Picture 1 (cartoon, helix red, strand yellow):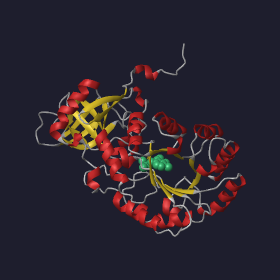
Picture 2 (tube, helix red, strand yellow):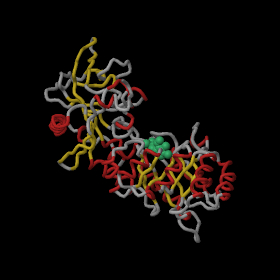
Picture 3 (cartoon, helix red, strand yellow):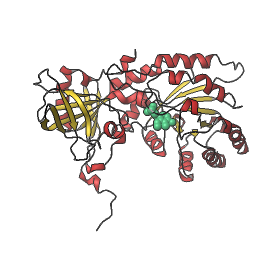
Picture 4 (cartoon, rainbow, N blue to C red):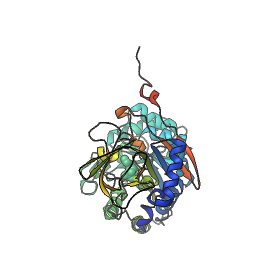
Length: 415
Ligand SMILES: Cc1ncc(COP(=O)(O)O)c(C=O)c1O
């Protein structure tokens, strides 16, 4: 079942992909981020249906991808939004999410930013420290005018080294009594716990094994109302690699929450915040070959994109499959370094990729770039960013303009 989520991109299938890629690059230029709308919808559905527990809410982590047209699709699928920063909230509101559909689980806001979340009407906040909790209580208690205190969900992010590993995030369980007292001082209640273990975990047991312990910690809250498992669910970038098993995780979560003995209380709400797993496989970066040279039997290919357009693989580690989508290839494959269009020494989109002999003008497809792709692109190396296009059935539309050089001097002050 996990295979359903991976390597089914249109650009992983040779025949159709080539014509489509050609058409898209002629229409919108190169390099180009291409999102497959149907695939996004299927992935969201696959994750959603893995949870039979009826009080489950899914919140897409827009840290991975903040394109508003995509966020609108995600909202249309019935998901909410997880905000890491006030910027995520702003993007979410722009995409039409109601403030109640936005869960803030982040770190280190100043008072102005916390007030901003309050003014925007965000009602679920998972805080990272007691001092952030105090700031939040102070601001929210001072102005509960348009927020029903009963609708306010305040939680703490957990730091349990044996579960979360070495992490800067969260508070220790022994801090919970002080946190409970603090919220009560402000006439509020601590109602949730949030569990997050770093990003990109494909081992399903890393999540299933901690469920009981996280629930046991949550049960120490007298006003416990929700559990938030926020993000970190992996995506198998390598063909045949281990994939996160959503049905297994969903079944175990359901079982654990349905067997809680709370006959007279309202059911616990479950919040899930997938980012990478929801959107990684839905996008491809198309790029054209601009230079080919050989060093012995190694092919060195220059492309018209760069790690500043897709910083993840060579700057932050990791791997993305690269495929050649071109007409006249022989079946022989050569070890190929796929390089960006700068002289930055780490400007590799891929190293030692098995690719056919390439020619200038050939199209390469860099797969699985939907998460932390465009979102982590930058103006480092002073290349304007690519355009983004959405495929919907047999049609396509531009969802972000290609930048031009003006972007490099915007906001600069000079005479
Ligand atoms: C609280 C929280 N939830 C969800 C996510 C999304 O993580 P992932 O893309 O690994 O699912 C993040 C990422 O930073 C996060 O901090």
